[in-house]
Image (cartoon, rainbow, N blue to C red; front, side, top):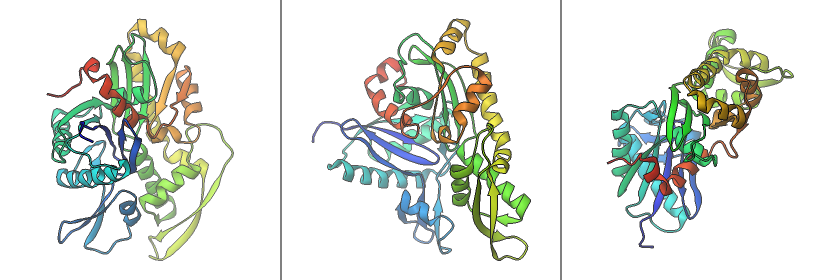
Length: 335
């Protein structure tokens, strides 16, 4: 295999995905690294590392090197990417040598943050690194006609950020990026349980609650779930029962921030494209699109049709990989 391999990387706050043209998604695991603090060695990456969160001895820490969609720890991100490339090449059955890589960046990221992402990928041996804005990648991955002069509205609710963009003719016409996403919902749930029940729960438990009984602001049949945590008064383990209606209240404010960003983006839309939006609707993608009732709630609030992308968790990665063919059109190639 001598030809330059072309791969797309969705370097997300919650999950990192690698897409190759020939094999599709070759890596899809949490963006978590387990590190030995004494030797600075990387012990595990992805699922293995995520299972260690909150369960390791003092000298081993499981960290998430990306925060709000951008790199928080450069060295750890580089180490994580090297391990991911190794794992991805095993799946592909050949070693990836000097690949051309397209990486997506949040549309609200600064030039310093973009350069950090570029440098981290270059340090892993990439030959060329192109950057593409996340909403554009999500739109390509959701099979929207991004290079045609029609309005494509994408709401990408990721782990660290929510990106709302109107894309037409290969470029972003209007966009908003807010640092509210799935992680914020988890934090809201941890805070709610702590405040109302004096119970401390970990982020993995909070995520489990969100996925099982978390609801957007729609009427639904009340569901309950038993959870375990540490009682802050006695310091002992304790089990409590949570209701989906209280979880809905806990994440309400974060959901309203997302709605505000969508409204602000639609208000900035040129009138010619507004008609397209009424006809074509809005596509939601990212892990947050899977929250129970999300599609119904947004549709009621913004009064245009709302659709969930075919596979919301993978849209950005697939779009990043596919964008290699249209990167010159999108003119996002980094020098």
